[in-house]
Length: 379
Image (tube, rainbow, N blue to C red):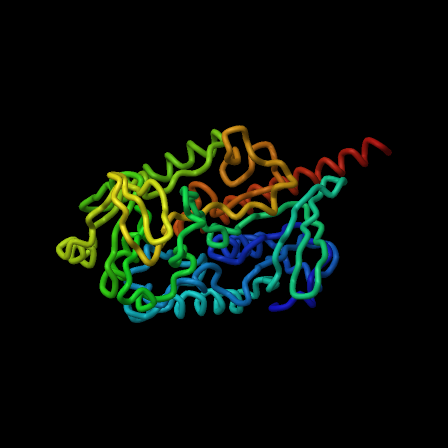
């Protein structure tokens, strides 16, 4: 399905988002006997996936063309179907959306797009109202449970610095990046200490004069072992269990000097500067008080979880995050977040989709049994 023409009015489970986590959830729903809500015969459990994109691929549709399959920071197979064999230098923006599209088609997953979910709120009868917009249409799907898989790409984080509004040059975020040639001959302040920041710093440095700023001194590692990943996931899981915002994985694991970054280091590109203190019309003021002229400020400052549509459910804890019990919002068996916290990785996505579906099935089974018991008692 690719339009809103076949939008159902109700579904047992609504999956919001058709990136890797959303497709994983849809796969496991089908395995547990759920059928597409559109045109479903009465009696079976139903689901639908609502996706805001114009086509398959999730955030991979928007990655820069120079991000090759050989440099993608780990993309795990979707459950049930392996990725095709491709040339390492193939552009991820070509390969991965095509893979996701073939996956949806081969498994017959019920993806409706382009549909943007604006609000999820209480229905008053124990259900949830999922309010959507698509093109010139809008409506509501009534759900018994939701799996939120909206990721972070649609919510880039822009930090605020004094004087930012006075800057006469160009400011852009990682989400806006297209190609290095757009910076040719310019002086570029690259901000951020994550994987994307150092990859794009290296890329842009071939055509521009770059200056690298981070809030903290980067931690470099010689290698990345499985136990390092496990430790990072455990730390993030601890935070979300306490209702705190998730940490960046890089803040736990550090950065690896790939061959291209070692070459950049040899060229002097990886000279890190402490974060500037303010922005002026023609540049930035560095930590030691120097005014550094720049033409571009390139913010590689990460993303936040795209959860604004869930605000009516009042899920936030006092710590600023959402307190989680695995994939389930703590105390709310109808709402599962995947791609949030410890499942915000391509490997964790598949496991999270399976776990969310298993818990939703148990919740729906329990609700059905409770309704049968109540009805019998009333007789």
